[in-house]
Image 1 (tube, one colour):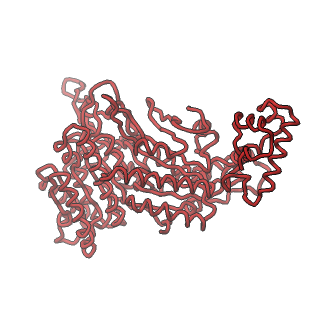
Image 2 (spheres, chains in turn brown, blue; image 1 turned 120 degrees about the vertical axis):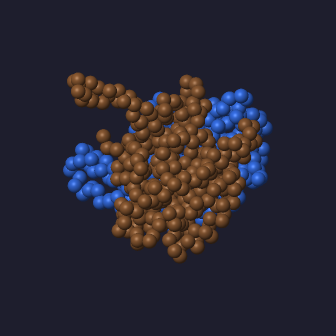
Length: 295
Length: 322
């Protein structure tokens, strides 16, 4: 066994497609590590996943990985139409990288997953799959959307079952990390949130990460799957959405007046990451995708 | 060599045994006045006893009966050794204070905490700080970083290395204005080169690596710290046989302690936390269970209190709880 030379070990990143978000993430989603995106439903997790699978196909000089991606989805249906929409705008803005008849959607491999055991099965098959893909466009990104759905229904609330659930977390995470290391993949996982009831922060009064508490839609939440899963991921990002009432000045015919308009405020926070400081930024979701907003 | 074989009077023998001296080696490092006080005899009698003891000891040098076990030192020698050992600073004055100067060499220190509190950051910081040259109060050694989770980010290590060098040059400027030769010749790249980085993906690899470290350390004598981040990750999957897990873990811990003592280096283990089901409530505990908690010398727990990070010494033979 020889130690790896640190000077040659630079971690590649996959761009998110937006320079503001990339700046927040110091380049994008890192390879050889598991990044988790936590958000309530409707916050944009799937949007970011789709966007990343498209941008992974960009050449390395433009921040991509020049790679195809494997998308494992657990919640039906897979948003094909939205992917198509994003694909069109992706192609039009990056036309010079792709030949005319090329469809970036061809390089996104979609697989549906039903249970946690099914996921383990799939992962043992992924090894040869990625190996084979090296000949054409190698797979360098794995997206699991969402991991929480696999675990939230099958397990009872007894200590034995919970223990089994925890050991499954570590098994899955360790397999993902081994894959990530072997093929230098970036792994993106999405997670749901649960509500926090009671005065303490976090489950059982436990605070994880930079933020004192995660807020979204006016409620205090915390990521699902608990402490065990939090130990399995390398970085965690949180997307929040809130309805804010903003004053907007309007010029009307009978003089100036201001309207109070409800606006959706979306923010991306870094909960914890080994290479990122505690930062956040605002973003919005448009037809072309998810983009950061600089205020 | 037992006391009852000494050619001394029966009453003296009786007093010796009741005072707790049952073998010659226990008499070897005591002075006659102390012995006289303990046995309640006159000093000349005590001196006599000691003379007899050393005499019979001297005649049996072939048996090497001075120390019961070869390599055993008297506690006085050990205290002297300990005082001369250096510590590795953690770059946080408060943490260094409660640790008594820093991370101790020849000891296994375990640091645990919730995800996101900074265990990996502390590990990287220690791996960089051990390289501070002797002139600046550091150990000037290399480090081994064993990564089991993939949380080591080279760019972050680079940042920390740069900051460390900046700190050293500031120190240089303030305090050593006349020592122009002590300029910092280190570059961040050099610091990174001195960190031997291993990435392992399964528990068998982890054990194999720790076994291999013996050979590695005898080739690289200037390694002064081993950081394992984190030691528990691969052991939390289902092990069908928990007894096997305990055996493997204690074997590993023993080897690490052995390495620490033999090569005079510090071992830092980073651990995760888990919830313990005690009665009806949940409590936070460091992972790997109670049997593991016996194997490390020092334990530090990192936790959040409000908006700040706190460190708490959970177990240590020489430091107060703080």
